[in-house]
Length: 85
Image 1: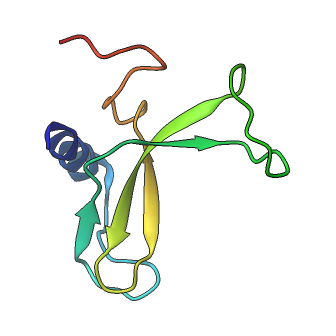
Image 2: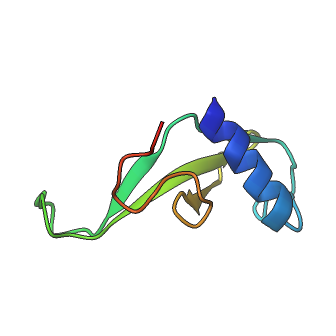
């Protein structure tokens, strides 16, 4: 839940229009989790020494269009380091 609050704060500062570019609705859901986005390698899973982008999906409640917020840029997580408690 804390991550969602941080994403909402980030979006409040950066997002100029909350209208979905596909359906024009303005109702969105923010994931409670951070996911990993990594380069596709012909279906092979490569572990180690590959860039990983931590993302938080924000999904339109009407059509399902999903935008991805970079969790590092949004200051929700650090670059590969465990968050300090």
